[in-house]
Length: 281
Image (tube, rainbow, N blue to C red; front, side):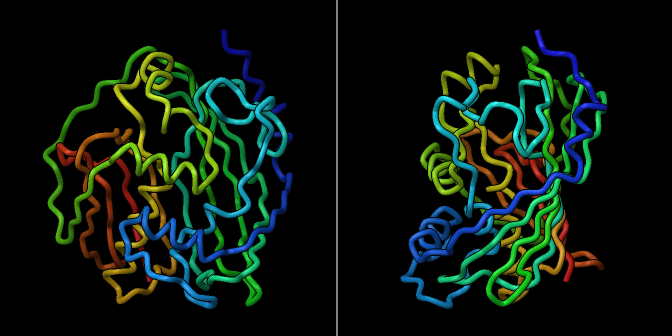
């Protein structure tokens, strides 16, 4: 049985901060380029890294004894101890100021910005908003907000009404291969079992297969946006997960021009959007 959720207690985490430092290495850049379907090359000191390389840097490291059954660290510490079993990255917003480059020492300063509770189709939802500022030797590189959602364990997936697939002016297709998911988990030191442990994700969490990382989908959307603007990252990029994207099927990365910039989305093999984003310059 899930422990009672005490929102007043959880909101005491608002304002807590944490700082972590890491280096952008050529090996990391090669691995991330390969995972984002880019030319791997031989990155040299000073070369720009993929725009979301900061999601691979200074990730929390816990001993095996401090991991929960889902592979995540046990609740508490910097993030509030939300007593709901499922934790996922729901979306967020990024401001790109300056690219991180090979050889940079990067520092991430994080702050718990808000903790809220809502009720959705799957039951109680607890949202934790975390603000990050990432700096390099040249100053601020990235500012962002991440929205983390915790929810109850449900035995089946909520049925959704399928609308006609949206049409895209720009489209790329790939396959959500389990090796791709493994590589991204390794690059981000993400132990969450839903991305690599098929027995766990199907028998415990009740999904039909391994789940594609939300940040990996967002990273592909950012890279497509930049590609369509001559290699320039958007000034601001916002994104939100819509439904899970599973292993073993073709998926697409899509974009349409808008007055404000680009609307972007990833979609499953049926063309149904799984994450949507908006990019502005």
